[in-house]
View 1 (tube, rainbow, N blue to C red):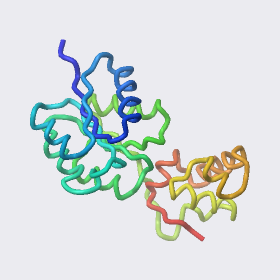
View 2 (view 1 turned 45 degrees about the horizontal axis):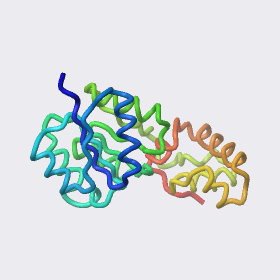
View 3 (view 1 turned 90 degrees about the horizontal axis):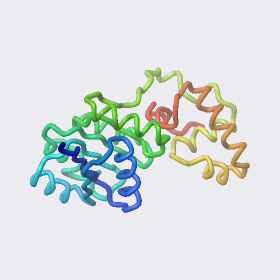
View 4 (view 1 turned 60 degrees about the horizontal axis):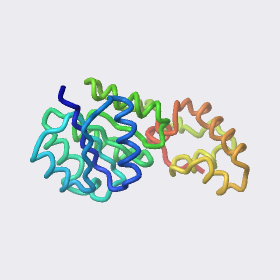
Length: 202
């Protein structure tokens, strides 16, 4: 039996090892190869095909050229998933335009990341939905002043701990505010909130 071959474009060794472990949990024995740059990834693809390619926008030259577009072009039949340390609308749209098959925020729960990878590997596409909203209906319109502050910090990609520190509140209180903001804006996750395309509101 030929093992699935996965190419991971990631410049942080910790992330390489963590995702290799996750992939082996999902698929069993597989061949995981890592490249720290787009150029190195293209060389590896030229030497032999992969079945699945994970490309982290947080890594060095992925945001440059040939970037994600170059990898998708060289991927052949391989399924390509773009990843982000913190979700950005620009990267989301670039990944879709390039022809990637999925986009995952690395801040998502392990279960969500695992499900996304399995579904893309099986032939589906995985992109968070971006609810359509009119210009007159800003996501923060129904928020209290404190919730609006939290909303703005969420758009900047801050974690609960960073929000608590920034606002001088406890972590537990920050979590409550984050939950309230997601509920009020009808966003199902932080990723979806950011990908609504909102801008900090005052």
